[in-house]
Length: 355
Image (cartoon, rainbow, N blue to C red; front, side, top):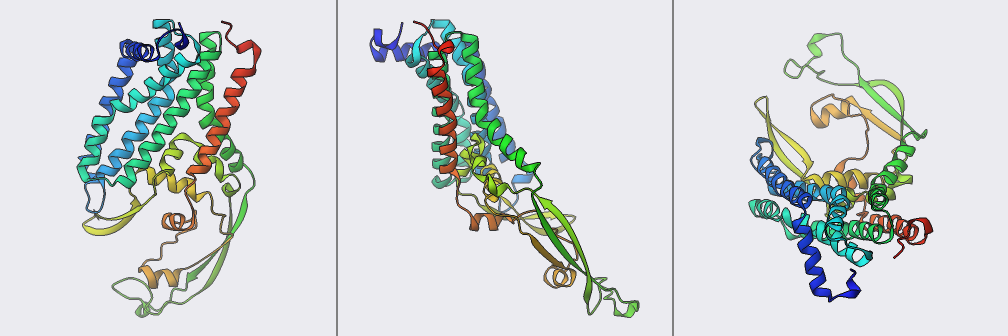
């Protein structure tokens, strides 16, 4: 029986009821609810996130959203398959309703944990609103791919495999592009290190710091290393579902004090998982700095230390200030990949359902 052969509302309610009666859905939804609550509890009451300056609620909320997204991506096809077997659903419309219900219900299952995280520290609407909006977009993308697969492909096993392949391609294809660039020659970077000249006379050494009283840097050492040119393919990074959701939220850095070895040391870190993934993704927009210079004398004057901070990429705050969100680009990427799969499922004769 298809949607066209009965009243719309009763049919939709029957499909929703069928989802709720499916044992696999009950198991997965309960797991999402439980794991989300555990993640929030561990984050809010962790000693590492209770330091002054950190936002444990925002961190916990990012955990919940990305956890739910993982379950939506990797369990929707399996649950939809079980529901269809339970009620004998056929056609694209029935399949779409089932897939939307499954994905949406998994989000609902995590609502208690999400509210707990939001209310714990009063997370700003500018954080949770775009995150939930992006999560809803991912639910729609997954539901459409699963719905079209089960509604058009004749054999259920093949339909499930195609649905998983389509969803996995949203992850595998961007990673494949990034991996290809990582194995390419890349850009050679020259690092010039100007070292401090240590005096032979110990009277010229500061007894407190252990460094020369009048530091002089003359010795230069030039090193080279290569970095992948991710800026050539940066647009594929936000196509990844987890990155797309993260890029919907403006990243932020937070400075907090960390009592290490009895000294209060200022530390800067991304405020949550959204910011961590977003900064990594947006950092690919920037080209590699081909010439990098470091002077021990300058470092000693500015920081009181000689530690060599070799260039390993742009600093997080530089990334935030110099790049734009890749959410729109990622959305186009996902739409392109999804459209290719849908066109294939609708046009390949051997896959089409005969009804």
